[in-house]
Length: 345
Image: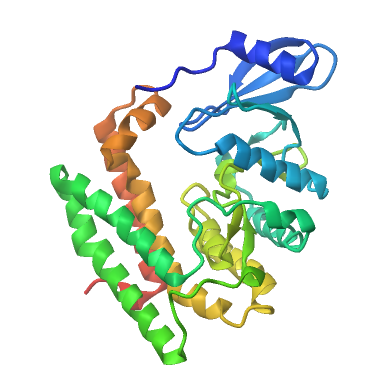
């Protein structure tokens, strides 16, 4: 059974208490499957954002609030400033950003703005309080961990594909063969170099990562600059995963030249201090691409259907599943076009 949504009256009451000031009105905004955001019109100050975090077994509120507190403390102004939180009510109060969803009207310099933020973020890796930050959600610190993530997601989708012949055909005839080739190449390359693919990445080589980062979680202000929201997955991760995820993320749908420019710019921030970065990027990029294909197909998993169905407000599940499968096919095709050796023969 789904958790009840926060009402506007509840948002007004909680917001007033957390702000220590009267809330004139509350309006739902930027709702999604994992949270609900209200714009709070304040009586005597600029509007604020109240975010409600439905329970799903993860401390989404704590992870995001700690992340945004860290970023604000170090002078980052393109992310919301945290104001107050109430863990018992599963709510937190943040600075409100005006702006349109960036993904609705992509701009030529979007990839550079994304890269600028990620590069700036890495300058905070050596801050004393950075060491207390959590690991990013679904973080990986070795190639073998990435392979395990892929295999675990694949197992779930394979079970779900019994009732979906088109899904089964895509998995067995396209995704699995290409990813198996990528994994064989990864292990062969590591063996040739005498490296252990199960060895953990040194802390000095790890990245601070928003994890779920892209135009889908960005607002464009009147000045054209991007502001970034939704840091529920923020933390430490392999920079190769950070670069790959940002370039591949279907929520951004970056054109290939833009994705390549982002990869090149952010990679330079890591290559100088990590002689294995380029190797990991080469062998892991298609594995992360496969993982993203499986993430796109999550709607097929029975346990995700009720949550997703709520998010689309009683949308036609059959049509939605077909759309997600088509998106996964196009994503897989892009990965194989980038690396023709992996294309199923």
